[in-house]
Image 1 (cartoon, helix red, strand yellow):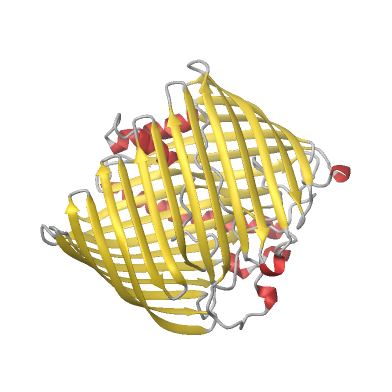
Image 2 (cartoon, helix red, strand yellow; image 1 turned 60 degrees about the horizontal axis):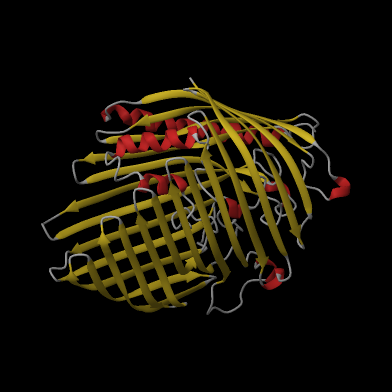
Length: 520
């Protein structure tokens, strides 16, 4: 199958834009101690018996070749820190089961201190895979099936200052631009859904008076999400909160919240009071719990985050209930699947220097072929505001020879309550429930050889007009990784995937995957 020229040009334009952002990030590294640029290439060959995830009678085998040359950028220390990997991924099908593609891949983060202990600027650029149709199969390796690239640019200037020994100021503005690159499916005919291109922003001004034992916090917040080129927002929220705090012990702070908020969504504007409470508890330097419960216009709002670590074990749990506008929001992202972050927490005691620890985390993920992230809820893009109820838990065990990472999540999103039905039923097709879990076990067999095995299961169910539509996706995989040298890793593995769906194709797939990673 020939490559669609329109699809081929779009990734190149986006990668050029990403290159411009990367150039700007690199230019800002002059104040850093050192900027290291290291070329690397990752390649894979996937031999599959069902390249298009069709029914058994229509299944066609193919060999998928993927080559991903990229640059690893690292600069830690000084007033500027740069970290990430970015490049181009080229994908080809030997038997033309799908279109060949060239697309950007990677992530680069910049953190900088512009004025000593006063002004800061953070930025990032991300080119990531996103499933086109959440009710279709989710391939485990590089493929053009049910796949498009999402370019995401984030800019965050902020002020943070300790004004007095007790009074602290935070003023920040976050802007996230999401742009779709290629990808077509029956779920999104023509790949032109405007909901995939969005501008999210959030502003916060916060004054904190440390409780001794009494204190106070004043918060002014604003959040806005709109589609690209849209004159009106999907959801706009602004609020002010006054929080009276009390600290009965150095590790514990209690707060009583009172405030007011203005919400605009679904052609409505409303003003409502906010009443609630919060708790911040840090029983040790290894554990922390933050929870906030509020009575708001949609009912009860919840935000809970609990983290705990030991030298061999990391755990986090998150739960929330809140209004959302962009299913794949990157201002209010769904927590709980970041293996890199958990591994960083586990290594904190043994390697307190953040720069050294960051390099070690990168090396361990590459050498042991660990996943950087685990499964998370899929995105259904919307043109209306929704109410989200979600919870996730993630755990990592890092032993001398064995590493185990696991996550589980549940999430429900429905149209935001307490509004009149001014939207046509056909526009309410994104309400859904999702459940998922994943576990990956890696065992070091020798200094150069490691084995891994994993299981992922997820389910999505439609709500409202999509009631009765559901897809269950289960994948089992196992493999071996071999370090043939200090800069080269070889891998071989197999997987078996079963997809059962009342909304899309039911299919089975078996694949053999060979991989190569080389750092120059």
